[in-house]
Length: 526
Ligand code: G4P
Image (cartoon, rainbow, N blue to C red; front, side, top):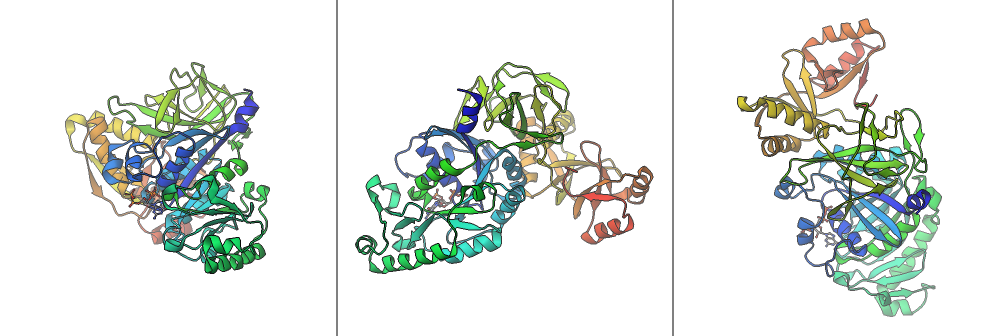
């Protein structure tokens, strides 16, 4: 198959949601359609969840939250669909942001009862900034929830999206009858546990048809007629380009656990979602159809196989064809590297591949060479953009609790930071190591992993800081003056860049006012 055909075939997207909205359940149902996992119907999703999908780390199982993102590919309708799973937990938002850089579009799952929740707001904001095409799936229609119009308003207001309903629910909860497909003008009748067949889809070209009353009851039929009329009046016709430009978001309704509305979503997704998109680098825009391979690391995962202490760097292919056993340039290290066993992720299975194409994600065995954001090319020095570290908001001193294991501790901290678990700062005042994170949970993760993967143990000492800001200034002497003035609060990040550890928002503001020529940055990408 030609490169162009391979590119055309691929759809790489991320599913995001607030925890518990149904992201895992939806992912599983999508995989079922792709034949990537075989489970009869919607049996015990809990069991599938715990074994078949994204949970690689013990700690995840312990905590019951999807700590790490993972990749699941499957074939459907002659397409290769690649789902990038994202952790819903807020403490791992940074991991999710990075995963979004590897996706070409996003499906947002919303719980019909809870509506738009805080985590979803933050994630969608990032997508909006990047103009990532977004599809919304309103889940759990088998439960009583918010009125569909109210929900559409909430999505528009809280997420800043312009919505375009593609299907419309008929009732909800106990009275959930099914969904009306606005474009195709047909009705799919609901029965619990995914027992729908093709025959449950009924053409209703005219909603005035009395057949509708027989199917769903007079009240529900009248309500649907009224609502669809309003929908037609309020929302414009679906325009694919507007969706691809990130200007409108198609909305689907369903119940993932009952496998209802999922196929409609998948079928339409396959038709409208973007294929591999160009990627920005500091040097230029990289297009997928360029002959020469390029890609970047968006995630590093340790301990995929507890028997070996290995790390896997997840590389998103951006252009050309990636080939096994071929020399590529690791741009940051200026080193040639080749990979004898690159893996592709098809659902829960890993397999070694010979070639990969734009949109694909390959896992490369890593002995500690990679950092998040690293680029691989055929020689060109490309630095991929949009993979920043965010200014952490929680800080603790980290100390060695076992003097015999100080080497292991140093190595462990070093590698965990490269993975992007947290950020390390060295405080100039006392030369002590400070770990900065976005959420509190990471401290537990770090402690657990240092112990289980590196045989090292650490203790923390609380540190009351407000924010870390990267500092830069064109004028060397002003920068030196600044560093002298705030010597007590200055630190260096892992790359040796100066960072101000502000104790309060007031102190930060004061520093900004005192030194107008100095720039304060809240992401590492500046
Ligand atoms: P997440 O990945 O977004 O965190 O959500 P997940 O899929 O784990 O779903 C959260 C809970 O919501 C699960 O229940 C799941 O079964 C349930 N759920 C998902 N889709 C639907 C739906 O369409 N309707 C209803 N009523 N529930 C749904 P749980 O009790 O936490 O776990 P489990 O024991 O049922 O697996």
